[in-house]
Image (cartoon, rainbow, N blue to C red; front, side, top):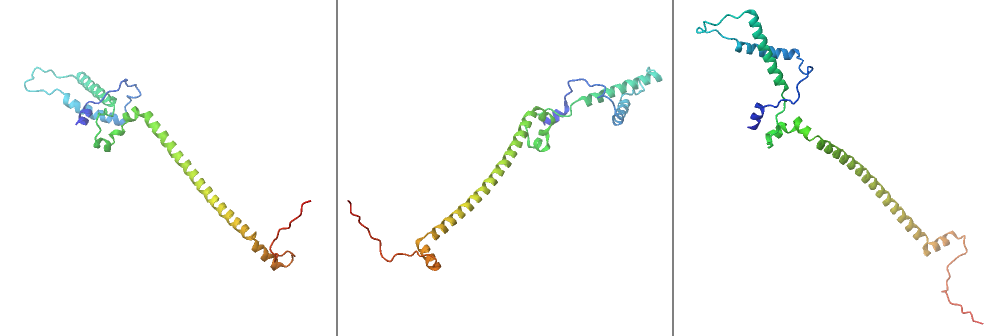
Length: 197
């Protein structure tokens, strides 16, 4: 309901139009010609049977009347073009206005341009931050895999070292190679007492 009232009373611009803005194209002259013709038909005085005192108009007077009608038509066309296309925003937003795109009017963007710029900047920062964090997470995952591999290699190396340095393993190697005179003693160890002087 408010939309219909808004359409009936469009706003005029605050500044007068310059000559460049009022230059007519062929399309606008065709429209104004049609408007002028329609108004000329409405404005022409119709002689009635009761109007016997009306004097016939001369060609100059007819031309003058036509020029005045044309000027009025052009002024009306200029006033209509001078009105802003958008209607003032009403305070309540309905689903119809949102789905119809009325919320995205130029006035809405002009009033909230800094908010829009801030939103765009924060969106860009959010996206770039997300990509950088994702890159770091991939790098951390790769380094964790390398760390696990290093731990497994160190564990296997330490277990091999423990196995090779065991006493039984060393004795077995000495028996099989027979290139060493070292062997295990058959007698248990005993303590040698040295007398003190």
